[in-house]
Image (cartoon, rainbow over all chains, first blue to last red; front, side, top):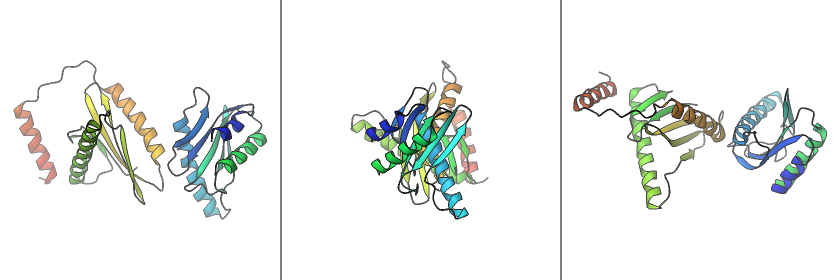
Length: 117
Length: 134
């Protein structure tokens, strides 16, 4: 698990990566810089993943495979493990700088999800 | 969040949210206090510090019970939540905020007032009247 997170945190601009239990919102493994509140990010990301899953199910678009929230001072990037079915699975989460290479982080998140699940 | 109680380890309720009837509060507080007492005794027999929190999940609802120490003694928080709309991580997150705020708000260095028999009798009568709806 640590090796999977290493691949993500090596990307320039990534401030931390976590594996989160989608059902409980608890941290399974983390590599975070100082100042990032891991348990808070994990709990809120899992809550958001659950709501997104229901919204996408209602919209008939199927389950999500990647989501990216851009904020003024950073970004949150998430790949739900288990083929996009976040229910009862693992979320691979990255916290990044606003100008991070999104495509590269997405690639590493997908690799990490494949490696740990 | 469906139900939340803040109580003393003896079962005395300090704050409540989500309960519709007084008897529900009394029962929940008494049961929560019993769990706190039994887990504390279990920890003592195992020569461990008291357990910080207890989580129990059913098919639809989760149950979270935790204790923390303030300047005026130990307090317990009981929370019952829907698994559909919340999670253990979220409950723990907000519990930690609540515990930190209650610790900060707790009077510091104050001498505890002696409990008088007259106060006890009046408070007991009030509690019984509330319990039986009189």
